Length: 327
Image 1: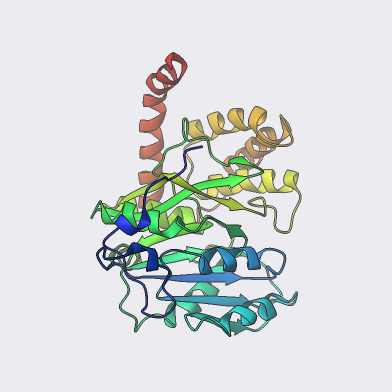
Image 2 (image 1 turned 90 degrees about the vertical axis):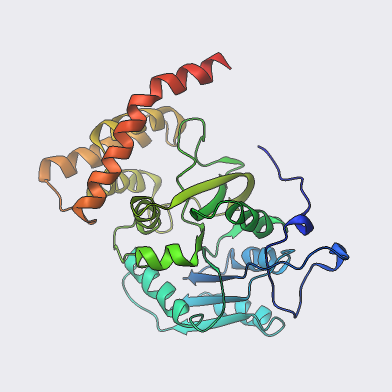
């Protein structure tokens, strides 16, 4: 895994609030000018959220504001956040009442509550940050530099690590995919796509990135920086087997190209856990969607755009695979 060895003080287009900056070592180097804000919807994240808070507090370039929205948490999440908010005025906790249903549309609702709290701020970038990740102190400095260098880059993220290895093998998956636990949007891009769609079954982050590309923005996972996801994706309240089955059905409803899904499931049969069953159950879930003609949860133009992208990548894959083997 590559690590970033540059000097964040050389990143000259990033701004932080005057209070509590961590740039004293930069000497006489230029003041940074890009301002970013963060929103974290959190539901019962007491086991991990302190890792996330410590990571953000340690940043060499801190956010203008960070709104943590507790979505009816009952496990002590609020107490942990309040402990840090008392010492850092740029951290704000917003408490929502407990809700009985657990679905991804609720997460979007929580995000939107946080979004209303930053509307009056002069920010350039807005980030959606999960409450169960951690990263090093240069994390946002590197992401800000990535987006600064390309004015058409609308969404940027980092390499997602789970169990000590990258969640996605960038030799085979596209670096244009930006994983959901951390997505940093250019403000104009986020407003252009209309924010996150409240989709109950999931794919909220995927849909946002797809919509950005459909509207002409570029999206990118920055390979020079990574973060650790402490809860395995898709397993917050279900078994790995159930997650695989539901994931395949969700792939169909989110417009996945059938050929792409087949190759994805074959890959997961030997790379996922449990071996064989992970990819096999995902394919069963997708096939069930085909047989029952399950309703798509994204607009038809976005389905066509996604399948066109995946069809092109399927055509290019033999050349890419040959290149990887040759190396």
